[in-house]
Length: 360
View 1 (cartoon, rainbow, N blue to C red):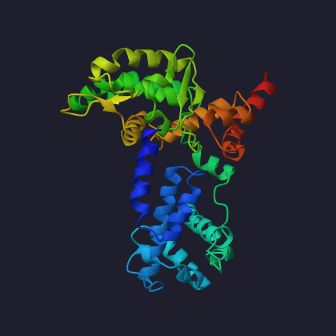
View 2 (cartoon, rainbow, N blue to C red; view 1 turned 120 degrees about the horizontal axis):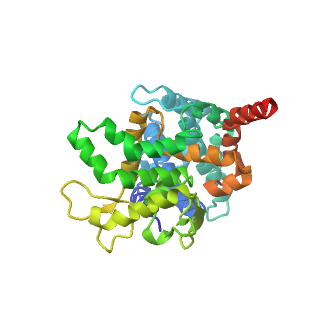
View 3 (cartoon, one colour; view 1 turned 135 degrees about the vertical axis):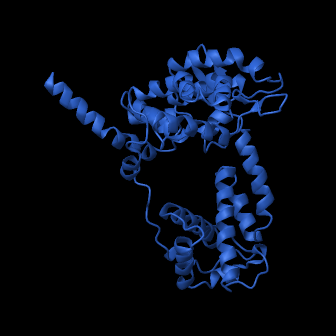
């Protein structure tokens, strides 16, 4: 089981017991189909909604666990409109349209289960009236819109190699006068360059990089075995190929992984961090990798670049040389609809290529 999935499952089990019994039943119903991460998001969304119901006096419960089916059954449409307004206008942290859509979708899933699938002892639906069936949730994520937001914020063409090269050399020159920053650079540049190179040459998600173990790597065949998002079969790892460019970076990092990071033999993680004052290295965290990429990106002159945009950068470059189905498989997307983003991202590049061919 992946490290992240194990952590999410633990937090899910800790929080679901504070939900009403029918929510616990719904979560159990969904466990075979959805990842612990997704179910944990559901719980957070229900905590928000139930907390709002109690604050507005729409439930007499002292805690979220005390919310009743009858209270959900007798909600008016005005209440749902009010909750939507609360999500979008509350001063302390207004939610984006995407977040509001996700929270309402989570509620729809729960209400649909209670009214259409779950039964009481007399075979009647647990929920006799489903107010959420009246709520229209417009699709927010359109591939073309997502592509428009990404343009100019990812690496293109020669920049993929230039960014990795900057991590190995350029960054050190920029921070040479800062002793602490320069020491950290000297300590970690091979590891950091390797991580960036691997993502830019395979399209791995940051969670997949974090969960990589030494045994998952087959350098000679340019192959990795990873737990892919949405795959609940915890006995199967998906083979993912990486490009030749990452092969030397991996070999260089592996040659110093144990000695430089004081990595104990029991530590299986591929990418290791050695915190200040620690006697042994341990698995890098997701946050550490995210912050590391942002650090280099700002100095490189790409302040919008994040670790996930490295994945987008690879995908855009890969799609130019392959079809949408191969790109979907390489990235581990559930459907080609998600992969369509890269078709829109490459529109400009493709049109320029056509013009160049006409001129030649």
